[in-house]
Image (cartoon, rainbow, N blue to C red; front, side, top):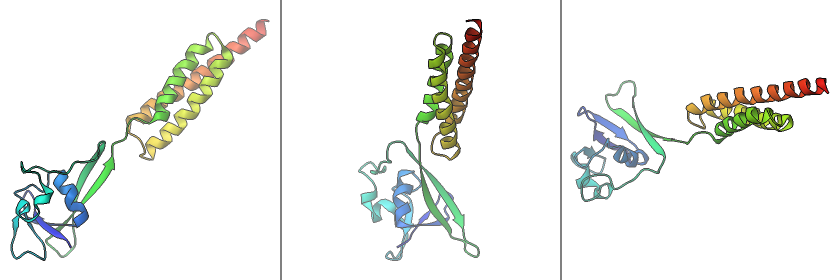
Length: 176
C-alpha cells in the first residue's frame, strides 16, 4: 500500500512502503510530517500513525548501514499533480584496493630498479596490471572516483619502473 506525505513545500508526494523507511532515515519524513494512506480517513502526523518509525525523541530509530548513503528522487508522472518519491541507496565504498596496490607497487618498482633490475620489472608489471584493473573498476563505479587518479599514478610509476629497470639492465649488460 502506497503512502502519501507532505514534502517540505507542503505538496503531497507518494512513496512505496519500501521507500518509507529510507525517507525516515534520510530525514525527509519526520515525526511531524503529515502522512496518509488508503486506510486513514485524514492526514495525520507520521509519529501518530506509525510510532515504530521513530524513537522517543522524535528522531528516526532506524539507522543506515555504515558506509551507505541515500538519495531521494522525486519524479512527476504526466497528467498528475502528485509526485512519486523513490529512495536510491548507494554504497560509499573505500578507495579501490587495486588502485592503492598500483601506487605502492609502482613506487617500489622505481625504487627497486636502481638496485635489482629484475625486481623492478616484476614490481612494475604488478603495478601496471593493478593500475589498469583499478581504473576500470573506478570507471564502472565500483570504487570512489579519486581511485582513478591513484590508479593512474600507479600506472605511470609502474611503466616508469619497468622501463627504468630494462634500461639499466641493457646499460650494464652492454658494458660487461
